[in-house]
Length: 182
Picture 1: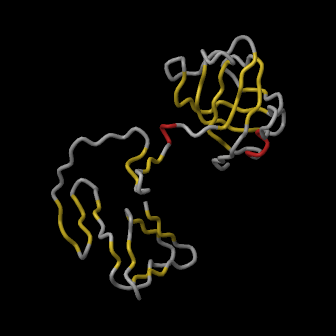
Picture 2: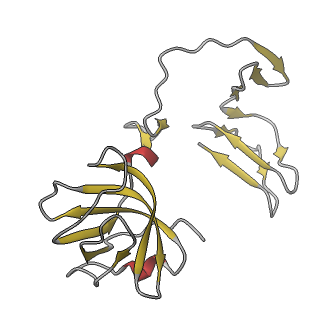
Picture 3: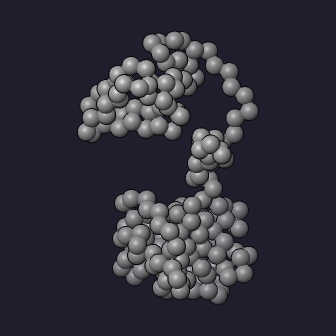
């Protein structure tokens, strides 16, 4: 089961209560949830046409019966709990919840994740090589790679960017390894 994000996915449902949503087909100009894939999860929003009742969460799509199980509620008009859709037709669509967002400033630098807030930071640290490892779990990395480096096979590495690799310097990432720059 994979988390799948797709654009312009929207169907309707008819009064699913607080249970699994039976999808009634793609709205005009939109894709059906089938593009998410059987057994996969996606972020969803379900809302009354009036917008008064709504819910955002993580759902699991099932091809058989074309249903969306409301697995995890992230936010809702019902205080963060399942919303009871007891009458009418609802719109159900793929969305990207603000709680799961990665926010970038005008230069494309990451500002933070979701609604995490940091008002102050104090750390005692020890220097080991070119990295600073703080006693509270924070690792501070150099933003310039000035010497050749090879990530060990089968390992992952991460850096907080932007990261500059000096001219003539290489960073080798072997098959099966990863280098993630946040």
